[in-house]
Image 1 (cartoon, helix red, strand yellow):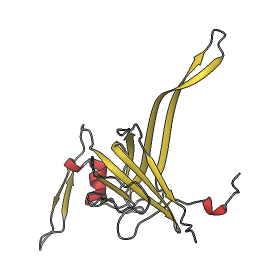
Image 2 (cartoon, one colour):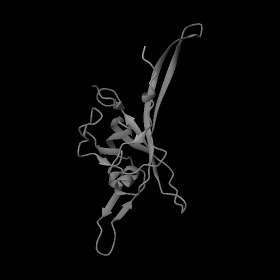
Image 3 (cartoon, helix red, strand yellow):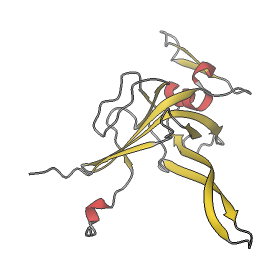
Image 4 (tube, rainbow, N blue to C red):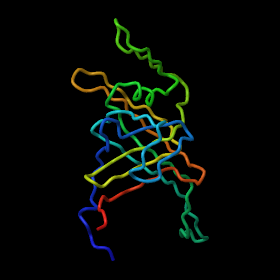
Length: 194
């Protein structure tokens, strides 16, 4: 039996330096399979995320099989849905593309008389399915969450106030990959052998 270890109690801080801890890439991009693996250059980081962080929510729906007397004799999985949710704290090209969809954000480079301009549009259209990577750390311990197939399916309410930052909240729905898995979680406890 394993002993309890306080070092196994982790926080979910973002693992970021100059890039964001949440990145997306076109579907089919080579995916990392371990913590510390460099992300493929196609992954684009999304920038700062709000202090509420990242939420992973698995949702399993089951159906009971009952015998003649009405007793439950088995419970089987009817459906599974896994979602991740976060809010972008930056209003940047990357965050707007996550919120509105890549095809719905146009960018005009800065000139000598204007800054970089962006136009984003909302409408009745599906957002793109992409691959996603989420990097977290607690000291030397690290976590990598990989979603091979994920689609932003919910856009949260955006408030424009003087007293707070504009955030762009989204919910990412995960779909199964070729092996039937929606989400991969890789860890490294940061404890090296002698």
